[in-house]
Every structure is written in structure tokens, then in C-alpha cells.
Amino acid sequence: MFVYSGFMAIALVTIGIIAFYALITYLVFAVPLQVWLRRRRRKFSLINFLIYIAVAFSAVFLFWFVDYPPNALTVFRSFEYYIMSIVAAFIYWFWDSIFLRN
Image 1 (cartoon, one colour):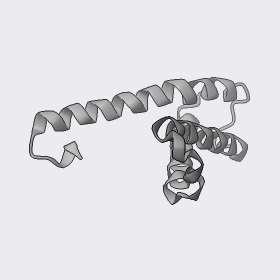
Image 2 (cartoon, helix red, strand yellow; image 1 turned 120 degrees about the horizontal axis):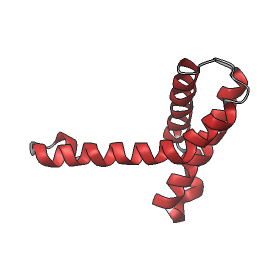
Image 3 (cartoon, one colour; image 1 turned 180 degrees about the vertical axis):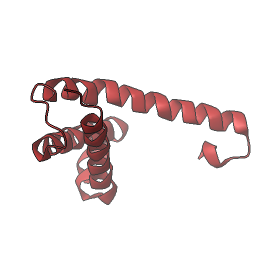
């Protein structure tokens, strides 16, 4: 909400906070998974993509549970939950496949 306000300093702080949360999510969930999956070293593997999807579903559920504990099970009825999980998995899988080196 602050990003759309006319006050630029609040918008910059909000963007910094969003970037910080994205970095924490990446460091906690994606980096260990990338290290584990790089043992097999296959680019654009469908199995790796399915593993990324499973981890993304659990990570998004965990963050939803932390934000809204009494309504945690209602997340499965939310279309945004599935979109966020699949898009996050696709982004991490895609970048991991591009930067995978032999």
C-alpha cells in the first residue's frame, strides 16, 4: 500500500522490506534445496521442478500460518496460494537451471 503513496521515502522503505523478506525466503528454502539438487546436475529436469513445487507449497503454507494462525487451513481454498507456490517454484527452478554449471 505504501508503494502507491505519494511519499517516496516510505515507498523506498517498503521496497527494501519486501526485498529483505525475499532474500530470507531464498536463503532459508531455496539455497539448501539448490545445494541438494546440484548433486545430480541436470538442467531443466522435470523431477527437480516437482521437488521445487513441493518445497514452495510448504514454504508458502508456513508463511501463511505465521501470518494468519487461526485461518491457516483456509489457505488451501485460496487461488493465490497455488499461484504463488507454482510461480516461486518456477522462478527458482528456472534460475537454478540457467546458472547450473558443469
